[in-house]
Image 1 (tube, rainbow, N blue to C red):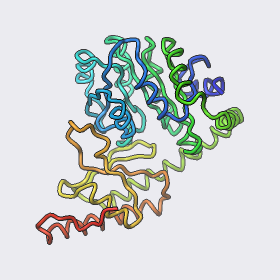
Image 2 (cartoon, rainbow, N blue to C red):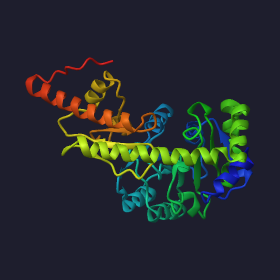
Image 3 (tube, helix red, strand yellow):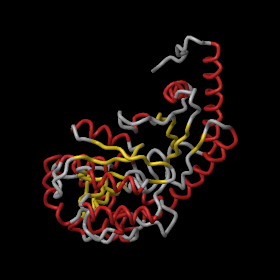
Length: 336
């Protein structure tokens, strides 16, 4: 299995022998193990992008780990601010989703990736690179941070669940040499081993080329859906709404007018069987929260995407109309 993953990762400019690859029960397990185990730099805090994958923030809070935030916009990171954090704070590792960010949907530039790798070496900070949608990449020149790592400070995570089957719960961690023994010990104490049946299924798919062909189909399908989302937002939403400039993947963030609450809108849409995710859980408590929704195209076709955005606009208009006729500010939505 690890040999098959090693060959697969080489296409993405990740050259790591099987001994450096840890098979995990989904990338989420790898995040839990890395957050729990000590690192060679002896540091303790974790730097996270804001907004950030909500599951990572829940994990850090559960483990009682100090989390520090750095702003991530659709235009990327402030590298000067990132260097200040690396220099002045006791950063164990910087958790980043450089490709098809969750929830923004955007990707970092090559310049940013190279700078992050260089700063990691300079300040003895490790990088946990969550490349969960790498197999959806359409730009052959877009390489991960790990490909620029010369000091062994990038831990690269790859998920196979989003492409094949979410229930498969399979991922891989590419580990620097200094982490191999410790990571295996923590992994063994967690679940002894990842399901052999799931591993066998993925190995067959990788070795036969079935995974690669399926990934190509998914890239095309999701690309069409993302374009449909952008077109629908342009057609139905006006000023006050703004969709992030997602280059692909499965997510995009929709910024809402200040007077339209994201959670209230999400609750109203849920009653109409339109599911969206408020981005508030993607922020640390100490950080100013952007008023927005994460939109996903993974379970909706082009027609459903168009209908969903149209219903979003209609529901937003209804809520704003109610707020004008309900000056007390009490919600007219039944929360579920």
